[in-house]
Amino acid sequence: MAMRQLCDEHDALLIFDEVQTGCGLTGTPWAYQQLGVAPDVVAFGKKTQVCG
Image (cartoon, rainbow, N blue to C red; front, side, top):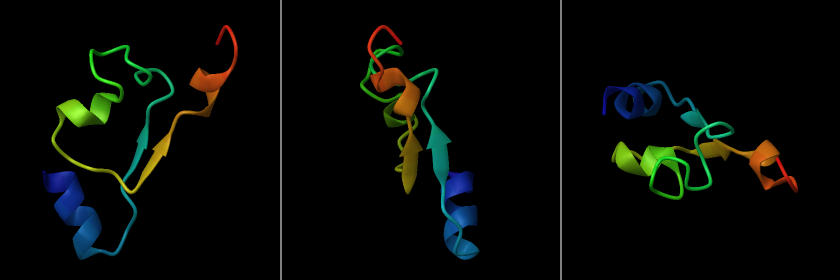
């Protein structure tokens, strides 16, 4: 994936925000799993709240 390669070339973190798409809402535990690329950081904090 071009984003992963670009981040690697520039020593930058690839960060995915899974607040709206994580926790199984897209059919997999994390939406990025459908892209075939592994991020360095995944943000998902709001989804872990009770009744969030």
